[in-house]
Length: 319
Image (tube, rainbow, N blue to C red; front, side, top):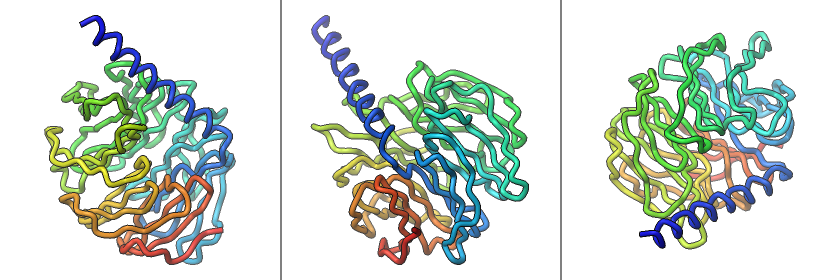
């Protein structure tokens, strides 16, 4: 038993060390971490560690606005009905914030770890904003940026993503495990997604709320997994066809297609069947559908911003 415990500790330390090396490597690399299409379909937001949040017009793909934000923007999320965007940051002097594009007002979100956050999401009504930070905290804000509630993950490990249920005030977080909480902070479920010590990266509820998808880093021995879970967090299917980690995943508005950002743009159906695949010259990080569900935007490790159709065919790019 002692040998097994020592071996487990070594695996955990090695995984943490590899993740730290990766983080250090990406600090100095100019990566476009995240992108999101506005709910009305008029604007596209792109961020990364370029010291700027950039907003593009959907009509002509030209620059519309930009906001200076130091170092790394880890994730951006448009409000479900308003011209407001939530921004998560890390390794930055600028705190995570809510930005109103109509007034250019920026509301700083207090209480988040000094190391920043990677998870951010509006609930289905747009009334609440959840931020999941690098100290394992989940913080709930109202639309004006007032902190309503704060609770801790089971441990202090950084949370990589958070996603609200599409019909209930329940959220799922991913880090070393998958955890489901209600809005009061009560832990509803905690599960280890695979036997290996592999960090999860992102999560997306299906529009029906009956299941959700997660993905992870993978490691040198084990491929990155895309996994389908039912609402009770019971595993439905695992997919390991990616050559690299799945950085981000997102459903189209109809909920019948899942787009994934990895070594390629891959589109799956609700059962996990691969529908389309689009090759990429570099690793894709951000991914988002437009309002009509016929266009996808991706951002990448080499600062490429590509527009694809819903068959994963490249249409154009943003300079």
